[in-house]
Image (cartoon, rainbow, N blue to C red; front, top):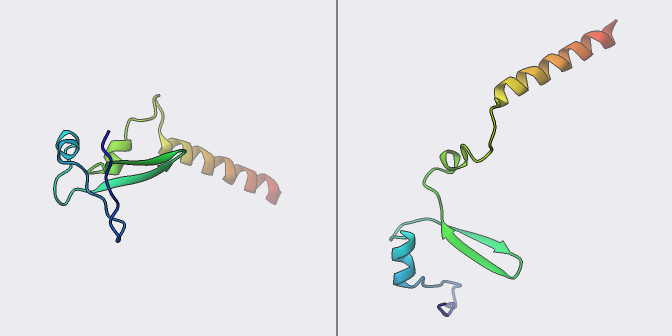
Length: 82
């Protein structure tokens, strides 16, 4: 565990060994997450969309779900008109 000091501007210095292990280089982006009991700093993914792909298991299509939902809404509208 490293203990570091926060500057007057609110800045912190991530120790070199940690930056190296985590692949944090000058210009890298990191995420700051507030969690119960503390703050988590972690490297930000290069492409958040690409990172999120595949995180939900199963065989489904959001497009098919949207089409199905719109078809049901149209059917309800038609019923209500008559």
